[in-house]
Image (cartoon, rainbow, N blue to C red; front, side, top):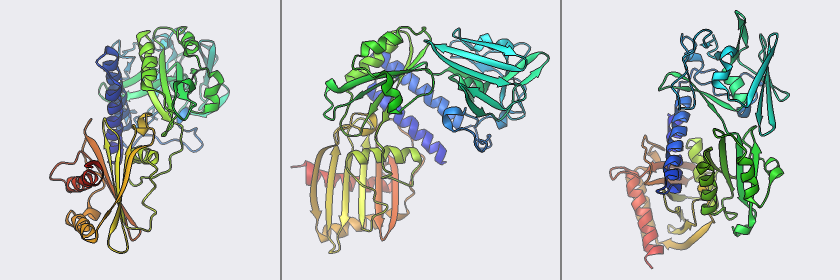
Length: 465
């Protein structure tokens, strides 16, 4: 349930970002389609079941690991089809054919190597050892595997595999998940087509960020990394840093037509913003040049866990927005506090916090953001205010909480939407912490009554005047 909720939240947020970015142009529509395809792939891979292989002790983590969640329950399948980049039907190989071994790994015959891998990649065999070299603009990635050995070597680094290459009838079969991933290709299970999906990962990663806190265009910097792994380590990114984007374009223009480029906006939650039109111009230009482009945003700040108990994706998202508003975690507080956070799809975040005092009255704090921090265009607090609730008003508020049975409301329910808004209500009392999260609560949902109360409070105390 938690995994499914996380995937739905990821899909919802990704589509919101794509819709917010998209215009009426063809490029905007394609961005939405690409985002949908990515999220579908993510859901297909992660939803394949809980009986997949687990990483062996000492196995390198994510960067060097293919997705293995589907592997174990596919081990009994007799025919293996491999889907390319979507432009052609799934490959149906004549003999020798790929197959799943007892570990569920896709064993691919090197005799068909040229059908999957592009022209900038070559291989050679020496006995039972196969060495594959990929060349992207002069940057080499060298991967070698050997029959009977579960050690893959990529650029001198040893990676432990869950299976070994084999040789049958003069044909060498390699574990496609590991070898493909090490070379920068995606290898996943396509649940809909019941086949292995194989596609090229990014050839060049492009980065843009702003060195000036006031977000002025004069602070914009650009960089790129050719092939290899996606990096957010600024030391790696800074190697090719320049203030002149045309220098980066010169590199991209040397790429073959089917190469993929990922443009990333490196941002902070307050200030140091890359203007949307600059990032839009970059991604539009890459797309128009015929390259397979996509875009991402990555926060350079280390965000404290302001929200907890929800699935990880929501905790991170909401914490980022609250951090931009200088809000702190409630779950460690010794006070009696309630906080509503409203996250609209296409508008700024609103937070209202009610702190119950010992004398029976309450203090009210309101904040609204300037931009959406998790989308890279946040600049902190745009509007704020303070007010109080009298003792009678505070008693009415606490009675409403009792009436809707707030402390026993489920944290999350199975609900999905692409626009609307997220409502998060936290409470802490006598050291106990509770949180509820709803997407656009229905009128019969008790959370809707709490939402109305909080937002009416904001209107009456801060907006009406």
